[in-house]
Length: 124
Image (cartoon, rainbow, N blue to C red; front, side, top):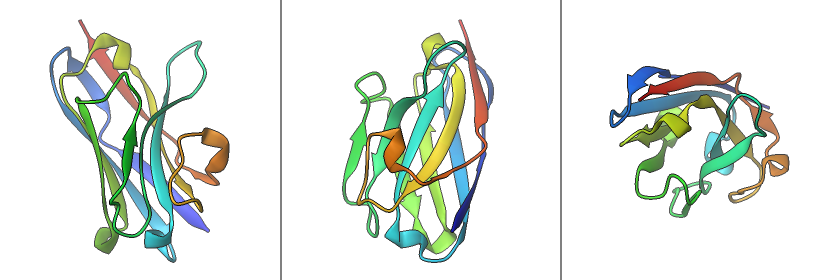
């Protein structure tokens, strides 16, 4: 069982940066693949980024954020992060972190545990 709590969201202007954090509780954190998803009003939840279990050697990004966002994990702190640079208004959404028993995954139904989400709003 893993509990996830996101933080770090807020209101920023286009071009700004934000760093989202997700704190996890529970055992064997390093054995989970981790991901970030987002959901904008009226849209389905979409994949943003994923990082593999243990060392986090493998990462994957949605095309829309590639080169701007970076996912990382700190197993000693039971945390996963999403550094978001050059934010755009279309990045506005509720951001969720998730944990998967897979090595890593890009599909939401492969994630068993979810946080409650944190709002990111980017003004133009």
